[in-house]
Length: 191
Image (tube, rainbow, N blue to C red; front, side, top):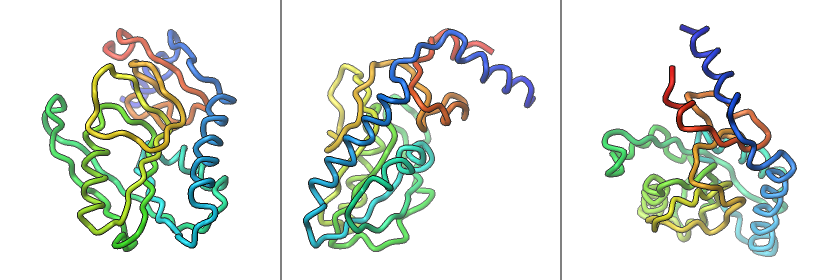
């Protein structure tokens, strides 16, 4: 079984197209950091930064060292179950251990795709008493329709294609790529 997945994972990149190289990715991360530093660098406010596991781990790891203001870091883990076309049910596997009440919370995620999950996360944090929720995504996918949430900060806008790299995966593989690669649909459906 492992060998099957291993070979399939390698083959995914055979026909893939690199749409953003490592330099473009790092430039995007620096732009997000600069925007956050401009907003929070002069305040007496110490926001809570929440990384959304597992896709945001790479983005968060590159972003945090570039932030120049005091912050508290925590993470959340949410999953969707059920009918993907209708959003499914959002289940919180890990809620913030840190108190969000009365605070500004910066949610860091890898990609804004359909937006249902991030919209739910934002509303839940507001319901938990957050004063403000700022959504910072590495990539905003141009899906051609209105989303239920608009990110406050975006690193890159990407085409409506299946993308791997910099935290985004296919079948659990290729989160570790330093750039972004678009996979062909037929390569995703084989095997």
